[in-house]
Image 1 (cartoon, rainbow, N blue to C red):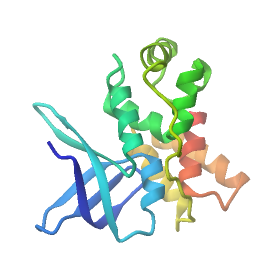
Image 2: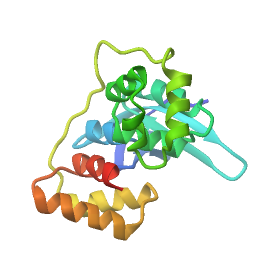
Image 3: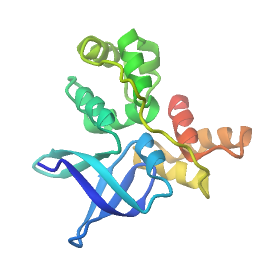
Image 4: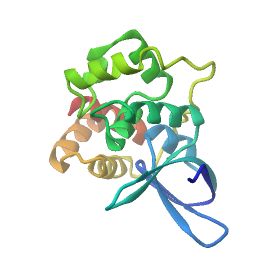
Length: 194
């Protein structure tokens, strides 16, 4: 089992990071927006890893913070919540915000996330309310301006499985209202609009 991967941050997108290790191997890890924001502008990275191994795929998920990995693992332990849905949840409601939503039983906020219906939201709350405890320190989330923020946000939404036309429409509306919008904020807001 892989606990963490560290090395040169070779490629970084809002949904994935490729880390080149000293042995000459590059690992592609799916990440949340919180991890993306924390990694922006860095040349080296160390990501905590969660592996999903199936007959047809071996997928790695990376997290800058251990707390985020714990939340991810708790979420995928809920019936009906897969790894992709857990990453979308962690991108829409980051870290302690997600923990607070679950602990307060805010079904409405969970349902606002794509792919989460009433039954799944209620199941997440019932299964995790007592397991999820607040952390003293929130996840390290930093936002920085990114060149071509619109295109990057659009590409990230498509990688998350959203329709290109719907994503484009939502992002156009957001960037028309605030042209200086950062990628992370644009994706987070667009997720609540679709």
